[in-house]
Amino acid sequence: MSKVRADITMSLDGYVAGPDPDLEQPLGAGGEELHEWALASQSWRESHGREGGERNADSDLIAEGVAATGAVVMGRRMFSGGSGPWEPDPRARGWWGDDPPFHAPVFVLTHHQREPLPMEGGTTFHFVTDGIESAIGQARAAAGEKDVLVAGGGTVIQQALAAGLVDELQVHVAPKFLGGGAPLFDGMAADVGLEITRVVDSPTVTHLRYRVIKN
Amino acid sequence: MSKVRADITMSLDGYVAGPDPDLEQPLGAGGEELHEWALASQSWRESHGREGGERNADSDLIAEGVAATGAVVMGRRMFSGGSGPWEPDPRARGWWGDDPPFHAPVFVLTHHQREPLPMEGGTTFHFVTDGIESAIGQARAAAGEKDVLVAGGGTVIQQALAAGLVDELQVHVAPKFLGGGAPLFDGMAADVGLEITRVVDSPTVTHLRYRVIKN
Image (cartoon, rainbow over all chains, first blue to last red; front, side, top):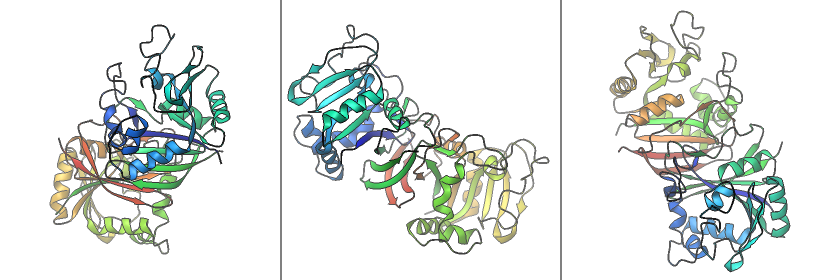
């Protein structure tokens, strides 16, 4: 069955990016370190066109997610680091070069209309200006039998949870304090219920998976 | 070797108590539910003089903590829910009745001096007015070969971590959003390092244990 999955890495103190992000350091101070576990894995490297990497529980878990995903939803800031009109945005083609790692349709939430942007390797960026419900609806239609991945950032995942649109939440808890930055859960509705469905333990990160109970 | 352990239950959105705590609901809205996993366990019930409860991984983990603990450090609000002078505090003998579940010396951080308060069952409350370092130092001396448990609340655990006084941090992540309340980590120093040492997975809570790396 096709599901909507939210999946993101969080520091133990609850941030998905550190303080003071900019174009040089889009994840803020210390934010890149959250993702060391992924960058070290064979399957992350393969999806990004790189060789090497470790074959371990983290790598298996990433491969499982890649195989299940038919379409992706993300926020404008995750896509380009920018905001406002597209023309002056230096990353208006995204962070990932000509062949982004998604190999699937990606629906980017933005306030600024734009034509779809086809890239190499099967990724096409679609720009959605009418909100999270529309973005997930379009992604569902595009994903077919596969899952929709809500990839971030934190506010987009919160919006999707609050709107009752998420079936499964996976949080990768990195053993790190960021001390500030972009919180994953900031004023979450307490009536969104969670049930633990899987915990995968590795030396560098803890993968917590929940079924989301919609009230 | 004697260690200083911080140990607390946190919601997935990072709170140790919910919004609007009062004397009827000292853990705020929804805060009691964080501790359902403990209250259901045989070893928690036994330490609180109650019968029954489940013998499971959660219960074993609590029993392990109880056996290792020689002294406890906690904040005034965790002790009584109050603040300010002791005389008008309706819970000035603590929350736990005549035979508190600690069965060991407990060092309570407060701004208001007070004589030690011996209770039944081996618990004596000592009141410490000169800060976290003094409280942990006195608890270390009292604990002998056993561990010092820093039991909460969030601000006391933060102070102890920031002061480089904690060897081991255990966070029990409850599958729940509180949406507000008392955060566990609120402006943590990003230079306090963590290393995952153990993850215990149960159906109702995930126990994350870290070695604290003092920088």
